[in-house]
Image 1 (spheres, rainbow, N blue to C red):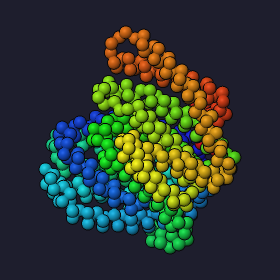
Image 2: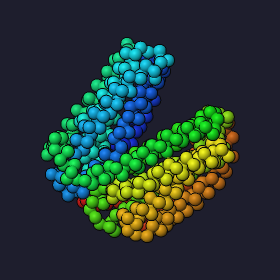
Image 3: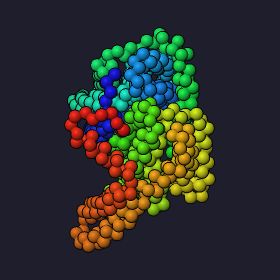
Image 4: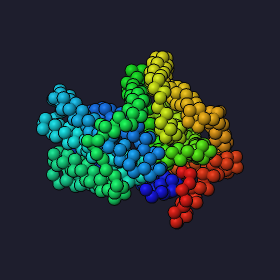
Length: 523
């Protein structure tokens, strides 16, 4: 198998993720209004509800993709085509039975669709067409597209992302055109399913072109499953982790409704819409190194592994931390001019939202390496995380309402993700003192604190000098001054005090501006 630079693959993943993010954002924003005008808000709501039902059924997949991806890192690094074919065959065998199970469960669920959609203005024909066409599109992943896991393990996520974005963009514009011309529900759904088929064909073509030796023998999958008992072990472990995340994620909205008013929930959602968009963008860019970490761990150079963790963590903290201070300073002023002063939440809620955003994004490097090492044996951790989150949310929610509920997720993340998971990774994976992790936090944060203080003073000073009475103009100036100041002050300090930051930046620049392929090196 041709060996390529981990840096180049990571950069390519980042570029494609960023381009596709903005393309999907602009496309969805542009076409959504057309669909609502010509097909109706109720029809879009029907599709969203159907998607939620099918998303719940897809929980049956829990763990298999993650487990197989972990087991593929080593043979991909070694170029062991035989073992890769065997593991893909095992995955194909398992996915086939999961697909059959989901289809059977979906048929049972479909019997209750008249009850679920009893108040819908649409005929049951439209409801069933929507359900089964979306179901059939998702089933393509279980019966055909499961081989995509090899692209992930081989650091080629950009292939899947690129083809998916291409077909989705074309699909939306075709649907938009046909909606304007005919406003036909069945035609809209047929195009949806057709795009899933086209995407599958493109992925299969790319897989054959990239890996001409790749063969999946589903009949051999059951026998090979016994040859690789670690597959079953890892799947069982990952299932518990995924279920824990699901329970935790689904419980928070219900607790918010229980302990806060509907208006408070709406106000909170206004803020999280902004932070989640930025989080998704930076996850797409920063998570591009995930596949490279698996390749790095498979290489087995302990010093290099630890150095790369420090570089990935420090560089991410620099970006995420500075943006967190920008959020803290600018979120409420933005909501004020966007939706009005009545939509501003308390500074306490803003602070919790910003801290939550920071913790959600900063867990990335730890997750990469935990997945790469296959450290899923702490099955008690997701159970404890869900229990802590729900318990704290109930106790604090009864006393403080919305801020108290949000403290549940924050407390669970700190105790399990940042205390336990870090200790688990450093002692079982890296086999070094976990104190190094907290040293990285301190070294990375204080330059940004200095930058934030300077930026706050400078931005407030110059904003008060503006006599032009336009809220948007004042906000843009204020945001520009604060952002430039915090990055302008924290960057040279970070450069001076952090070797990891300097090494990462130099390697990144070298890869970006060097035309010919660089030797295989750190991500």
